[in-house]
Length: 322
Ligand code: NCD
Image 1 (cartoon, rainbow, N blue to C red):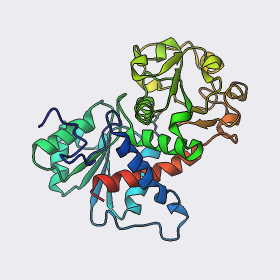
Image 2 (cartoon, rainbow, N blue to C red; image 1 turned 60 degrees about the vertical axis):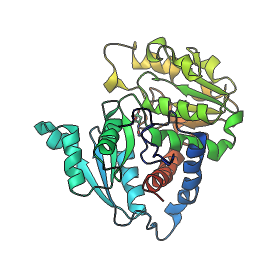
Image 3 (cartoon, protein in one colour; image 1 turned 90 degrees about the vertical axis):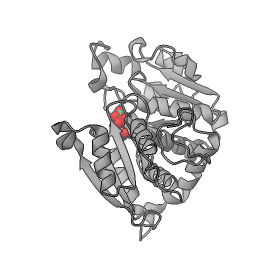
Image 4 (cartoon, rainbow, N blue to C red; image 1 turned 120 degrees about the vertical axis):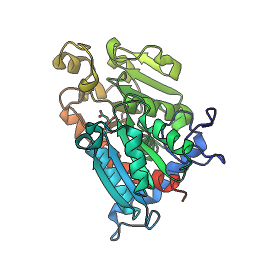
């Protein structure tokens, strides 16, 4: 394969896979957000379908658990009129010893047109896309639905969509990303997207044990004091504590964490009076976010879920060539 080329862009620069927001041109990101706009009100229509993926087989390959992401990808593919096949991989062939690429080859032999891949190993979707390219099957597309700690590009895009919906201009915003940044593919994808779209002030807030070393290289400012970090920001993105990814004790206790980094009405008052509160879900109430904030009028957590379907429709129809 051509090692120098960004494998998610075709020779003509068109998006053929979505693997990461890192290195994706601003024009491409904005074209996805624009393409999602008409789909965002789709759920209110009587007939919630367009034929953009009619006759295409979309395989949902979730090697790691997910409810929201898998379901919204399935809804998005169905609204595009695709045939959707959900594979519960944990319970099937890889547990019998089959390699990832053998699984892929078998599904391509069943005429798969697109793979939506979630995997606990960073780089798995990239590996699949490179394999398809190297074996001359570049008509099959890959969409990363979250790989390890690396990237969650459709989550990043739906977060960008939500921010643009409520705040319009990325170039005039302060965005705070709070919590377990170390283990968060959500944070990484959002930070890459915000940097590309010219957001001047991106802050990461969390305890020293949960902020990656050299994160400033991504163009963010680091705060360990949440009150200082939230001052006058426009957007607050709360992250889930990824206990399943933590090796050893990185935190004293849930109660102690909530005291310092849980978002309460008191801490929210330090942000701008019209600041919005986001969370990718699933939320841990009382650990990273207090219920009155999660359910409060500044919370846009449920609109994020709805926008996620529209963004996934836009991504799938674009990589498939529409
Ligand atoms: C995120 C994920 O899986 O990375 N959730 C999601 O996509 N709905 C965030 C998380 O699990 O904390």
